[in-house]
Amino acid sequence: MNLHELVSQLIVDTSGVAGKVFGAPAADSSLRAFLPELVICATVLVMLLVRLFRIGRRIDTLWIALAGSGAALYFAAPWEHLRTLTAAESALPAAVTRMEIFTGMLVYDTFSVYIRSALLLFAVLFVVFTKLSGIPDHEDAPDIYALVLGSTLGMCLMASANHLLMVFMAVEMASVPSYVLAGLMKGKRLGSEAALKYSVYGAGAAGVMLYGISLIAGLMNTAHLPTLALQLAEKFSTPVPAQEVMVLALGGLLIAVGLAFKLSAVPFHFWCPDVFEGATAEVNAFLSVASKAAALALLVRVAIGVSAIAPAGVAPGARTAALKQQPPTDQTAAVYNVADEPVTAAGAETDSAEPAAATADPATAVAEPTPVAALAPIRSFIAKLIALLAIVTCTFGNLAAYGQTNIKRLFAYSTIAHAGYMMMPVAAAVALAGIDQVGASQAIAALAIYIAVYLFMNLAAFAVVAFLRNALRTEEIADYSGLIRRSPLTVVCFSLILFSLIGLPPLSGFIGKFAIFASLVSAWRGVEAAGEPGFYLLLLLIIGGLNTAISLFYYLRVVKVMTIDDEPDQRPAGTFSDVSLAGAFLWMITVPTALLIVAWDWLSQMATVAAMNLLS
Image 1 (cartoon, rainbow, N blue to C red):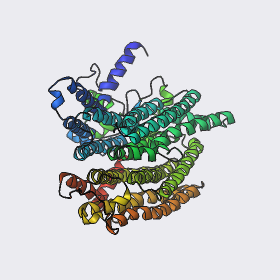
Image 2 (image 1 turned 135 degrees about the vertical axis):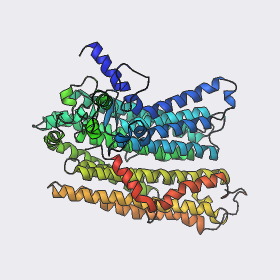
Image 3 (image 1 turned 90 degrees about the horizontal axis):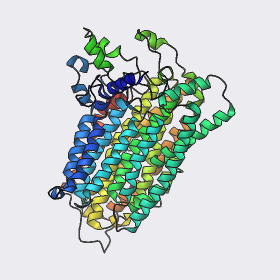
Image 4 (image 1 turned 180 degrees about the vertical axis):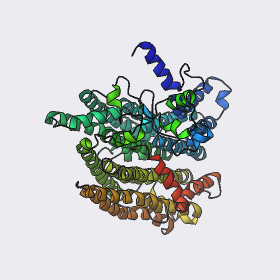
């Protein structure tokens, strides 16, 4: 390929149309798929530039952040993609299909749409939450919101990463602003200590992960995840030298260190309790919800990406070219017959980067054998590693929460425990990837349900902590004694949230845990039916159920303190008003926790669609 052809291919990849780079990108272009991230970048630039002018300093940066995150949410949602297609194309069942963008560095599919939408919805709610809680103030708001949106940008990239270098860059883009946010309260010693510990642990985890990436990429001669899966399948189709197996296993473990750090999974959880105690409740909400959702999405990308053969997808510009050059009468043929040119990573050979052989006849392409069976040892290793981390993380988080007297430290260990729960369906999906692709997709859909439920539960929990901190000037659980006599509606909201975190019906937490446990049962049966050992999946189910029962006690202890214990004699006169904007916000985000059971089928359908492009 000469330079002219390379540049032409890059232009088509970027804009979807030959001869255009930034002007009117096509619906199936890299630029259009990347539009939410571009909006976030523009918002950060506007927030920083507006401070250069005197009149700009009078503008509340909150409104810029709210408008930018709202616009990004609009462009991230599927309707933006459907709006750019014709009516006939929009009626097709899979208008959003798998498309590798920017020469294979990122991937655009239904899973990335779902996770990005969840992250940006959280960003909108988070900006409103900070306005009501009073942190940050007018002077620091541009810096703080720029850091929040910058970290959100990195998290969106984590959800779309398709290359090991992008994995590292996305993790760092999400982590570095978080280190600064942890020290938001500049005059608070605990906040400074939290930021220092977070940054030191983060730097160490990043270095370890980068070394693991270098080992894998050096041995396999590629860092593109679909190509890497094919290279591994080819290598494991014959006996592999023990030295190479050792290097691959070591590289995988080192990469897992970086992912486990973002998930605060045991034994890489050390930073979490101290950071949560030293940082503000607002920052804790951001780290607990957005960071965990993005880390889980990245775990899915990496675990599925190297243990299963990626499905064929459309190439940027392929749909537009087919519709322009050969306007057919059958719209279905126009869209789906161009899905035979998957994007390859820069420098990767086309033959090795293709997840499936391209043929003119779709039926022939489906019938062709794939090297899925050769990846069985890798799937077994990854599934058992994730299962082990999930068991230890879930159990430790719940047991360590017992002795906590500070509400933020209690929620730190609760966050650790929930990370363990949410890793369970990933282990189930990897175990089923080579046996039952539909079952594996259902396991990822269970994770997607839990992420949506968890967003509202934990945001509401930290909103209560922040509002009560402002009213009572304390974050100790004992100081919540008898709170029901002063703020009964707030106590009701907080109790509903805590019951939902346990997973009690009919609250939304029950939906999430039921979906996860059902995916474990399905995976155990599928693996056993295929003649492979699946006892560890049954063990996951049992330990998950036991941990749910264990968590009942420390969550109910908080409810008992608020409702049964007597009020302290020296409680400050101030109290949180149930009838206020903050109270209305609290009820708004508690309603999904309490009433999602009524419309859970809608969420289940969304989650199922989100997982459908990962394996097939």
